[in-house]
Image (cartoon, rainbow, N blue to C red; front, side, top):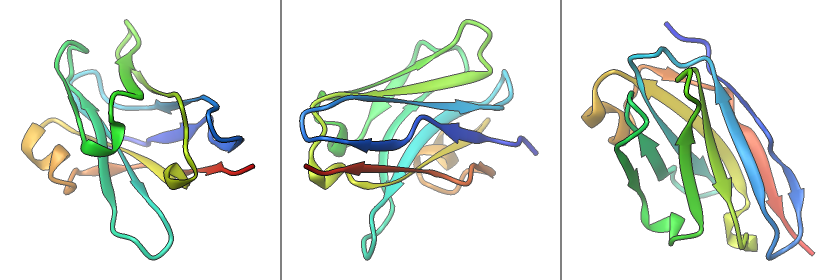
Length: 120
């Protein structure tokens, strides 16, 4: 079981940017980002396959977020731009070798999450 560690969260003003990192996924695992705001259900943000070529984005990404993978395949990034207060949430990364399980939110491995707060 992979030990996933998220980093890069923090507080930013509306319109700002952040880059989240997820370290620890296996080289053969696809990785996704999800987020959960207080009182709301968990939302799918983005996913990238094991090769780093195939990606999928949720509606919440709205062309503002980009997922990428290091050449070594052991770190996945989520670049977030034009952040809005509605993006405030705990962001989790997840990993699985099965794409369907991953984007369906039932991946085998999850990180502890990193808080993103967008506020003026």
